[in-house]
Image 1 (cartoon, rainbow, N blue to C red):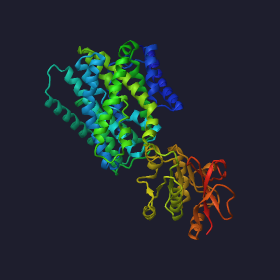
Image 2 (tube, rainbow, N blue to C red):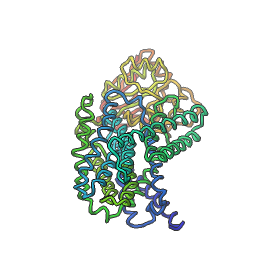
Image 3 (cartoon, rainbow, N blue to C red):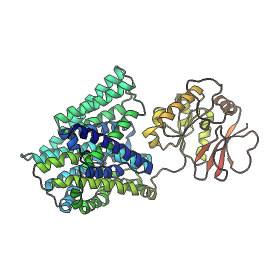
Length: 583
């Protein structure tokens, strides 16, 4: 290709990837549903976006390194300290039972359905083991299942990607190697690959500990060091044994997330942006290599294969993996209805199918289009049915508000108790030991970790937080936290007004986000100490003298704070008021 064609192809791939994600966000559907058909159409219309022509032999190793970055970022969201009890048992079983059952079952079904050789069927079975956080996460954001179900599925998707990648590499080399290995030799090779990946991940984590903790790199250089270390270690491991870099990347992320000494920021804006961009580019690039001529013969067989995977294999895997755990029947059933395929399946198919075809394996040319259709069909099926299935099984979080109250003053604890009595699921966070002890003594739920991790990103999604209320006695903390969360979190953030006017450490918060001017932190503490109490009052009629409105609660269970602009909800919708009554 000429330099002009390379420029046009690279630019077009990037534009299509971002445009597809923007369209998916506007339509409120998983981005992969748009990315795959867009890439497929672009590949049919023009040759400029074909990665084999743009990058040549460099495409496959670049895909491996890109997936390693994705899995490192996924590992940063996996804290081993939160994986305990029956949740841990379910995750571990889903990974090893899922691998042992899905690979042979998919291969046995693919051989007669697709009309391929047993070698190609074995390769396809290994490819379809994986799931992936890049498709599971967005789907769960729409569903909003219970915290335990979401944590199990995210952990499973992240771990099984690395295991499936290595399994695919081992199957590929076993098929193309003229010297056939015994089953025992295959297990030893698998163990060697896992061991190398674990060793590489621990080595990378040690390097990051030295850079981030001992050298104390700043946020910019620290982020660059993380990216360079993840890519460098993954490349080293892949150079020694293929696809071991995937395990190394996720191990690095889990160690960095779990060891308290690292103390990374709760929001990884750079990595979130990079992963989103990489996923979009990979899906567009890989799907552009699939042609209609290759897809047409496998459409009906792929539908049948998906039916086997969705209706038979996954429910059996989930049932065996959750047997004997304390998960409810609805949670176990929903785990059996959520196994979409994602970027690792696509990248593995694109990497190995061409090599098997070159080696003369019968039916190898059907691996990539069949994988493409399985990804499209599973994501579409689960994307359209996950929400109604979750509601039917009663595993969704309630639509009612779940406020995060920041602060541990006595009046804040009483407010949380009153909100809980009104049917709301309240979460509190406090930084001081005596405040945390007061919250725990009241039997209220206390958030662990740092505030930013709970009030933004994956932490807020896992906890189901719908709004943040900064109610501490420190005005500067409230103002600064409001400014930071305004940039870092998509949740509405409210704070108490400052007790004394002044320039402050940050700019003014919008009036709609500030609670009534008379109710400053010191004033609320003084009135509560003097005998004032937080009360629930009916919505009809005027408030009695001496009562100050704090919140209104509507028929849907949504909490609305009273701000400088007054009462937000329409009178006909309000069912109850939360007020501060006189002593």
